[in-house]
Image 1 (tube, rainbow, N blue to C red):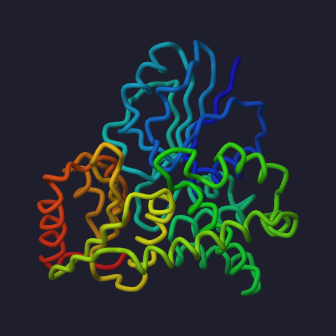
Image 2 (image 1 turned 90 degrees about the vertical axis):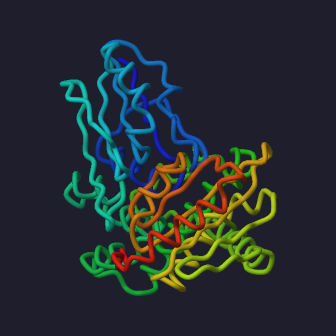
Length: 320
């Protein structure tokens, strides 16, 4: 029987996988990519009796591939926090899906493991911009503030590394990132043993500075849209910049747009609520407070900004 571990290349996907494999190690083939490469199950070549474990990619976005794997006798276990759509009722599929606004896949795995590797869940939550949930979990660990801050910086650094149009844009391939982390049950030991988190944090700060200086901003009543230039650093920093904007103005909607080589835009959206529903209307996906679109046609940009503004103009949102 062959094993496949399929995971988003961001902090949440990597830390979710790491927690589970610390408890249940297997020799698995790794399938991952940049953060926005979410249709990962189509790359899995599994057969009857094989086992696939999925972390932090939408079931809805992988539905066709998932059904095909199940039809071919593959056993699938699914950990995720994105909108799943209709979940197939098949004995070979086990799902651990929670779309609550205050959770992420790392926290779902932490709950599944009853907190056994929760320091890595804190890293996942901070990486996924769930500061409150991460801090609450840190309290249960009685972490001193300096140690909690180091876990926060690690999560944000790993998450930053996952953004790019392709793996070539990243500082570290997500497979290599996981392999670097794999020997360490304690993330504080990982931080002490390598300069990788520091290098990523420095690069992240430099990219954020570029974004703050070079973004073109369009502000409407309830939202702001930030256009970044076409560059590798823009793709890397896009999600982190969106998170920064959301922390600064949590009651507004924020969209960060970066042009792709084909002329369409990659869009990161942060909003008090409804980000997932809005992005699905434009071909994207995500969760309540943080979502995205992989290829927004230029002709639809103005309509998208207007829709974001209108969605937040009804007064029904509260900070997630």
